[in-house]
Length: 113
Length: 114
Image 1: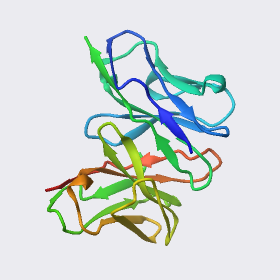
Image 2: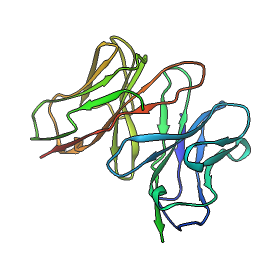
Image 3: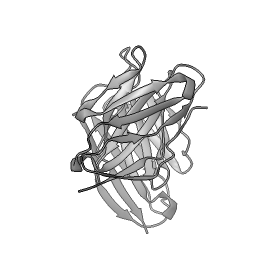
C-alpha cells in the first residue's frame, strides 16, 4: 500500500529565509506526487505535481519540488519565504485505478518577521 | 477555482442523529471523494465514487455511507452520528485526462457531534 511520511510537524522560519519541507513516500511503481497547501479555515490548494519527466517541478507561489527516486523523496522548497506562506502543507502520493490519493499528516509552517 | 460547493459549511448535531453532507460540482468530473481531516492524521479517505451509482470504501468508511445518483452530486451520510465523527469533511473531484489524478477540493464542512 502507498504511504507518505512528513517527518516535520511544525517548522518555523524567518521571513526571507529559504524553506525546505520534507516528504518521503512509499509506492511500488512510479508515483504521482503532489504538494498541497491549506490556509486556516480553507480547503486544499494544489501547489505542484509530478507525473513523469523532469524531476524538478515548478509550482505556484514560487515553490518547487524535486523528485528523487533513489531516496523516495519529494521535498518542497522555496528560496525566500513570505509571511503569507504561513499555512499547513501536505504531501500526497497517487496511484492509478480510480485515482486514489494518500496524504501525509502535514507540516505546519510558521513565518516570523 | 474548480466549481465545488459543500453544504452545509457548519453543522452541530447530537449523538445518534442522522446527518447528510452534500458535495456539488459543476465540472462534470467523473471521480469524487470524501475525506475527513483531523489533527495529526492529515486527510483520510472515507469513500469515493468513480461514476454514477459506482462507489467504494476508503480507509475510514465505518459509520459512513455515500450515494451518487447524478454526476454532479455526492452525498455523505452518517446514519447515527457519534462524537468520534466530529471532524472537518472535505469533498474532492478528479478527472482522468492523461495528466494523472490531481484532485480539487471543496471548502469543507465542519461537523460537531455533541
